[in-house]
Amino acid sequence: MIEAGIIGTGSYLPDVVVTNQDMSGIVETSDEWITSRTGISERRLSSGEPTWFMGLVAARKAIAAAGVEPIDIDLILATTVTPDYYFPSLSCIIQAEIGADNAIAFDVNAACSGFVFAMDVAGRYLMTGAAKNVLIVSAECLSKLTDYTDRATCVLFGDGAGAVVVSTGGGRILGSHLRSEGKSGGSLVSRALPIQHPFLDGTGRNPGGWGSAFPERFPDAVDKFIRMDGTEVYKFAVRAVTDSIQVVAKEAGVEVARIDHFVLHQANFRILEAVSRRLGVPMDRFAVHIGEMGNASSASIPICLDNMIQDGRLKPGDSVMMSGFGAGLTYGAMLVTF
Ligand code: UT7
Image (cartoon, rainbow, N blue to C red; front, side, top):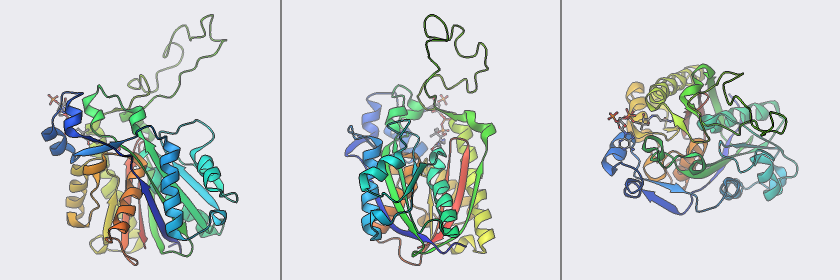
């Protein structure tokens, strides 16, 4: 157990609302298919605001809610698979914007599991006394990596940001359990820049192309666009989330049935239902925001937390099981009290 918890939350969703009807205007799909297979009715997409801006707005709200001064933040962890720059990191940009000059700032890349992984890192800094106030910012602009000609993926993703301040003055971190399965990484991929420099050959391109001298690591990753084996990821998610929640609850000595809220990564309503069935916990204890925001990767859990605090569902003393899963493959769960 770690004597630290979330003392402030904030979130940001862009104004552009894209409905299932809108999606059926660009790919062959229907509101009926998307709603019944995913639970998504609409998603928010950037109207031009970059990832850092969404993260900054969420961060400012979380800091205000926590009542801490930026100068008292010791550590900033940002999570994103859609940064605006390879470097500086998103966390360093946020640091400069809020004036948290005393903070160490670095990014954590665990894709959609990023928020839970960052919470785990934060907990360990807080536990050792290396930090007293940690800002976590999860900001995603998945529209940058979405192929809007691929109906199997483009209906799923959205943009947005969530942030929290975790502090030794807050609640408790009762346990966490993180896992990575790199051997299954090929089921959810997006390619970064190819190697291109003046010394490859006369044209500046690898004459043999990818795969001539070196094996193609992920053959499906032909470009930056998200390629996903949906069925594989679905099965993985249901197994991984259920297992990790059970491990955390057992290690913390808390009965799953007694946990107040389950805040899972919002990727598919059917995944939430399947986990609820396997755990034997009613759906009314699960945060469900996928319908109005789509899959916003690592931002989805902190956006849910902020919504739940804003509308009074999440109260001081409540226990919350969070669980993320995604590319890597990575997954994890963490049990906290507010
Ligand atoms: O955050 C990252 C983690 N990602 C996830 O957790 C995603 C996990 N996977 C899923 O949520 C689901 O697998 C999907 C929502 C992606 C797909 O649902 P599914 O029930 O597994 O559908 P499917 O891929 O098996 O496709 C069924 C059919 C196919 O047609 P045929 O081959 O049966 O004729 C697809 O071509 O549905 C078709 N299809 C669509 N039809 C209408 C696929 N996308 C669409 C679409 N509209 N948008």
